[in-house]
Length: 231
Image 1 (cartoon, helix red, strand yellow):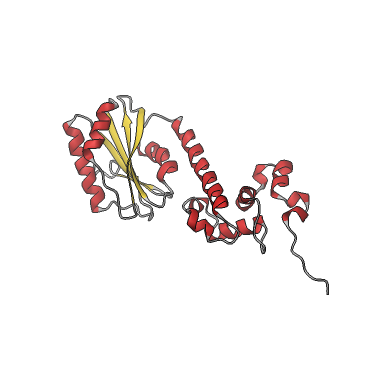
Image 2 (tube, one colour):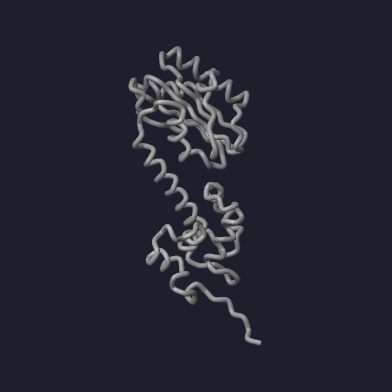
């Protein structure tokens, strides 16, 4: 019986090799796994780069947002993914986030909670940890600047109210919007969320800088304190 020998990518038909397939058929013809295979370049002794990439995607349920939540150590658990390849994948995912955010920046006027959610989802929507951000607006509700105020674990973040107001005054902001993410995917505000919102609202009011909204952002949706009438 002829011994079975696994083909490597270079021995595949030209149209089945990811790089050649991209050249001859275009980017849209490639699957997510094939695009990742181009990034990592090679697989391991048992799998081609495409097969390894397919296994990685299967592990994250073929969800690129879930892939974006993996860190270097998570990726290194896959046989054939060392630190360099893990860093390459993470860098590519970060570029994707930044491209999305660059598109959003073209929309710099806030007209409602959907605009705020659209602005922040590329920044914090798929993070594995919690971050708290502020938007500083002028009188036309146009964005002056954004600022990450804190970064924490899954249990929450700590906000320095005095720092927020100092930044608002320095930037000559006339109104504020806050947003933070819930990595768990739960959109319900916690008691701590409600407490910090009240503190920020009352403190900003003293400085005559109204708090317009506070959003909780997840991959799949958002919660607006203003829309729910509890701001």
